[in-house]
Each structure stands twice: as C-alpha cells, then as structure tokens.
Length: 175
Image (cartoon, rainbow, N blue to C red; front, side, top):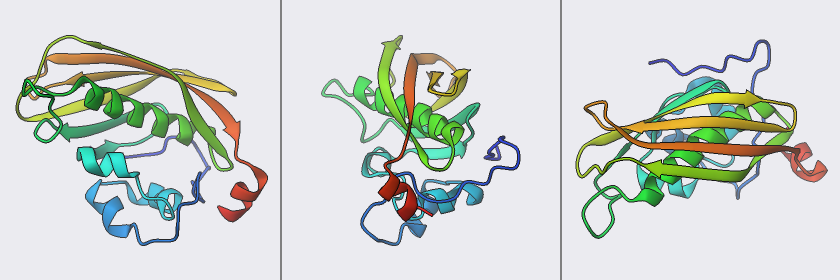
C-alpha cells in the first residue's frame, strides 16, 4: 500500500512539537513513514512508544491510516497481545490522522479513547485500520479496527481528538 496525504495543495511542513535536536532519519525509515510526511516529523521522530511497540506505517492520511504491530514483545503475562498495546496502536493511528487533518501550526490532543477487545492474539502481526468518522474544525473522531493475520477482528477502538493551535513560540520554531 502507498501512504498518502489526501489534503489537496497542503504539504506538511514543520513539526507539531519540537523535540531535542536529533537525527530521526533512520527511525522514520524503520517505521516506514512516507517521504512526504517525513519533514513534519524530522525534529521529533515518531515517538519512543511507537518505536518500542514496533509500529510500522503502511498508509497515513487524515481520512485513513494503516499500521502493523508485532504481537511478540507486546504481550501481557498470559502470553497474549496486551490490551494497552492495542489501545496504543489505535491512539497512534487516530492521533496521527487527526494531526494530519489539523495541518501545520496545530496539534491534535486525545480527549477520549475507548477500546473493545473481542479476541486474543498470541502470535504474528496485527494490523490497525483507522477510518475518519468526523473531521471538523475543532474535533475529529476516528474508528480503528485491529485484526490478526487471518482477518479476525481483535479490537475495535474509537478516538476523539481536540484540535488546537500550537503555542506561538512552538509554531514559529516549527517553520
């Protein structure tokens, strides 16, 4: 699949939050962040939790985002995928999509996340597909469906994000 930003004529520039200066080129490549989105994340990377969970992006846009995550390394004591790992995958997809919708100079902040866990997974890779429900001026809502390699639904999540302007000094530094 090819990642894309479907907003017309609106290239992403600047980072929503400036991290300490660093070289995130390899981190962005390892997470398969699409080339056109890399300038947006150049100063912050994808985040330590995304790296730790092994999340790899296949597609990123405001309307639809897709990523995979290995079960191994993300299990709870019973040897099955940790519900918190599923929730983190869902929040990652929904928050990235919301931030892409918000555009430069804005940030998405999660205000509600809920997840229903339908069945366990103990091996393989899971795939989360995030679909926009509402893309507004001040809020967004996305549904995230996480399935196993056999296509069985493991988790259904929904996230609502509040869209806010970045503080003036952060927005200026991101330019």
